[in-house]
Figure 1: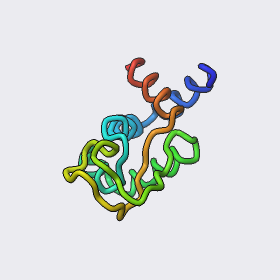
Figure 2: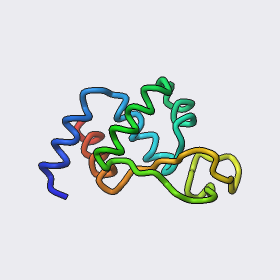
Figure 3: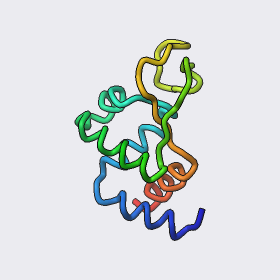
Figure 4: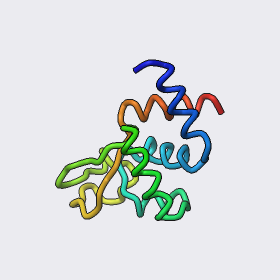
Length: 106
């Protein structure tokens, strides 16, 4: 991935601090769903859905397709293993690079 591309995406996402909050949450949680992101970040669910869709389009976030989620994968889960009842999301490698750039440029 080129540095210019990462900088351009970071500049695009730096207009709203909620992008960084959601990316930071996904970095900590590794895998999570929208309602839980809302619980931890206190951002409106509709806004989280809009941001997640934009991040999906930019290939910064991806959907996780598993039948079960273990606590080792989803770090904020209380139980060791749960069946997936939600759509889970995680940062892609590009997302991690953009998050790191945004975090370090603060």
